[in-house]
Amino acid sequence: MTARSSRRTTTAILAGSVALTAAACTNPGSTAGGSTGPKDSAVVGIAYEPETLSPLLGYGKDGNSKIFDGLLAFDADMKLRPALAVRLPEVSADGLTYTYTLRDGVTFSDGAPFTAKDVVFTYRTILDPKTNNASRTELDAVKKVEAVGDKTVVFTLKYPYAPFAERTVHAIAPEHVAAKQDVNTGAFTTKPVGTGPYVLTGWSKGEKLSFTANPTYWNGAPAVKKFTMAVVKDDDVRATRLRAGDLDGAILPPNLAAGFEDDAAKTTYAAKTYDYRTVTLPSHNAVAGDTAVRRALDVAVDRQAMVDRILEGAGKPAYGPVPTDSPWFAKGTERRHDLAGAKKILDEAGWKPGPDGVRVKNGVRAAFPLWYLSGDKLRQDHALAYASDAKKAGIAITAQAGTWEVIEPRMKTDAVLAGGGSPGDPDFDQYLLLKSSLAGDGFNNMARYDNKTVDKALDEGRKTDVPAERKAAYDTVQRELAKDPGYTFLTHIDHLYVVNDRWDGLSTQVEPHDHGLASGPWWNVETWKPKSGGEAKK
Image 1 (tube, helix red, strand yellow):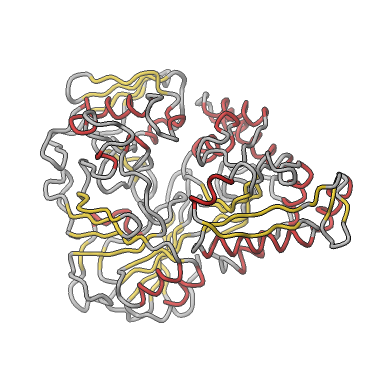
Image 2 (cartoon, rainbow, N blue to C red):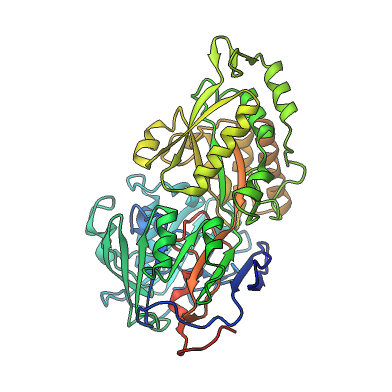
């Protein structure tokens, strides 16, 4: 990412199959400071809060949970490193057995020892159909998990699942606490106990999550002793609170982050992501479910204009869940902006312009609502731009704001400006989004997309570890999405964070669709060190 204004840019390119450009931008001569808070505390503004803090229900499945650890973790370069395990797993020649040796001397924050039984309990509970974990199918490959003594865990798979080790960054729950409660409703869901660098001290729903450093953390007690995640859903309010000194850092959309360019006491960090914005086109809507309408919208939308005007260049056009710079992207599936082509598709399908310019077919007007989340400026701007592009083709889309409580019951028939995306393996991006058997399962497959060719390719992609076969499977998925789009993918967005320049050790990773809960420069807050007074940023 290029530097803005007179700010300097630090860029880190991550190795491996996933590339990250992380830009830390600050004014020349910037000095530490900008906050009246203690040097050993930090308050950051995030956009959303989790529904639960239980790993058994999905919290911490991608790592960075703060309260918990996984067997493995991702480093700054998105490479796997040992966490609760002492080394990376031993994998059998047939790819069906993964053996983990656990770290000695690890305890939960209540003082109880961590053992192999906790790992077995965590994974078995997640796989239990009675557990309300919407991501259970991500562990479909697991046939069984067993403890061999206190320090060894063995996973046996049904089939060679290539990215399985990446699934073991999943947070581990304590059996001695969670097994005594109802897994779905017990106190553990809001008052967790973990092995992580921080201990939850309070959760005021809709307001903040408060943490204190775990003094007995196996990897050393954090220097940032108190850490608070302030839940501020409105982008403008988050920026205002940051400017007022109420926050030490925040995730912000590009136009609001730009307002801090001249603040010498703050640094802006940009992280490349797999985070996309898309419009769900529900199959149960008479208009949005029509393949011709879907195909027309797919080329009527001006993605590059959205990148330029809404993201101010901090992102790229999206043609599916896989970013165009990923090695998994299927070249040739890009769709160019073609308004004339969109009109031709609709004409040929019998959608004829009505007297008001809105197309009609068999008495049905080409009109439907598009919901976006209240207070989310990026979603609002994407929704309005999408509706504007659609109108030029003769499709009337009404953008409407609402909370998830309002939106979720309408997802079967109404379009939604949604977000998603997960780094690493294409199975992470696509299975929950597109598999027909998951249609209507919470926020999985929100469009209720049903394509048998895609279903077959998704199964083939996850059930082989042969790279060429996997690439062919996910190429098939992306080509089918171009022919039969159940979603209109709009942009992949870079995440921008503005943080007071008071600490050393900040960086960013390649990020998922996360809203700044476990991502952002605070993904490694446990390793931050306060700067000495007046120390200039290097």
